Amino acid sequence: MKTKTCLWLCIVATFFLAGCGRNTPSETTVLRGSIDNYAALFDGLSRVPKVEEHGVMVGLLDGDEITIAVVGNKTFTEETLFQYGSVTKVMTAQVIAQLAVEGVIDLNGPLNEYLPAEFQSSKWERTTILELASHVGGIPGMPPGLSMAPEDARTFDHAALEAAMASTLVNNNNKIAIYSNYGFIILGLVIEEATGLSYADAVQTRLFDPLGMETASVKGWAGDEIPPLLNANGRLTEAVDFDVAAGAGALRGSVLDLLSFLEASIQACAGDDVIAQGACLSQSADLRPSDKPSTSWGLGWQFFGDDTFGHGGQIQGGQAFIMVSPTKEKAIVIVTNAATQNMFDGLAGSWV
Image (tube, one colour):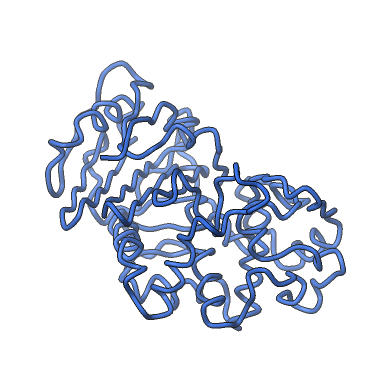
């Protein structure tokens, strides 16, 4: 679920992965479109898979052209499901943005107003929803008592979150950017309070269903095409299931689901429905903290320029990265079935 800011600072748009991993390149299987224009990307990615079960799925949007290809595991199809880890935060932020468009919440209002009564405390009066979403909320990266071990994630429930929030010290005087899973766990709670739905039902009805993300889910798998999940050493591991922490890292789905989402992101600012308006709002570079101009985080997205933004994710049994440029009508999804530490180190280049 952790995303390393330093990992993405070298990404400015075209997608090249410097050779790493094993010495023998893996074969690339093209499922749709052509990879002729992405030779550098796939040459680098071909060195990533370490064992036969390991594979990397890539989805590319370039205007009306869609390219989908697999490096490594030849059993992967367009319907294969993966864990996307912290890419979930983009989904959480866009539901928050929809609620802001609807006037249900004020992004700059005190968080305390949007919490269930039992979670409210004076400590949350000086923290805003936007500060949590842009990682300057003055709270730790993880709530007290939660690790990303599967058993912890499964059993960390609303009662555990209530206890964690009661014991959390909030220090947002300096608005220092600290990448925080904790903040998005709390935003999931805000979504539940504002909509009267579970977090899973809220993202399903507000994003997945209307955007045609047919096999996207934040609770279990929504299909049967599940690849072997591997740890960083290439050994089989288990999926991470979440309770109340789902808003920070529970997203699962196919590359087609994410391409549908990114296509909608490209078109968002030309739309007039609440989904499009919320997506457009989340893309505003102006929502980055004004008193910390060096901060690259806005409302869920990390910015690599005013019109290029993305998010990465890492979780036990998976790693992912998405990036989009609406002006250039380009987007990319890279996802794998292994938590390969620093798999995307060396991504560099220029957006073309």
